[in-house]
Image 1: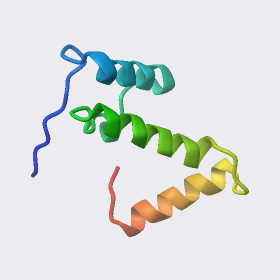
Image 2: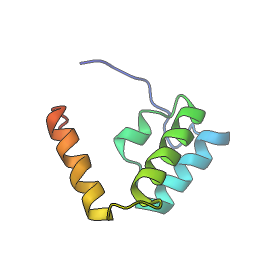
Image 3: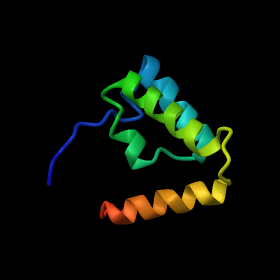
Length: 81
């Protein structure tokens, strides 16, 4: 299995710490998909911003429809998370 170094809460600082703090505030935890981006704070911030725009931004699709699309795409891609 591949290994990607992740920044722990204890060693996080600067932009990474700010993004982790926001993740805890949003969800009460840091999901693995976010944690794996901790070596690159800008990638983490941009990815979360993109996700937020897709799932929570203005759209002709309801939130439920967006979630259903995400599930179908994940299933098609054999994602197990």
